[in-house]
Image (cartoon, rainbow, N blue to C red; front, side):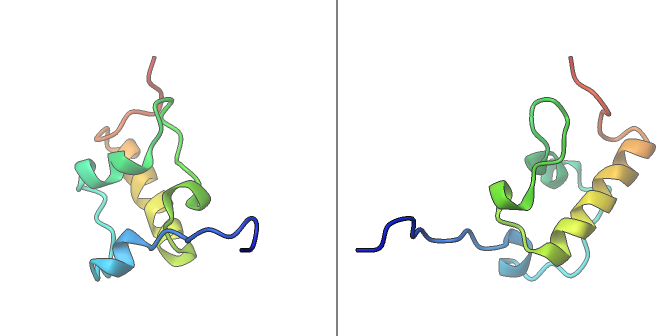
Length: 73
């Protein structure tokens, strides 16, 4: 058996065939923010590069119009 081999997580947005990530969908976006309100990296969440870029933009837009917090205490 090979050491260091493990299954890679599948992209949630590719699996569910979501073409565009909506910045108004706060419940989905909040899954990709850690408890300090930072955007989780793709290595932790398993999101592909294309959707990670869209996710970052959507989270930043949601913060801009106060749907998501910039910082949590």
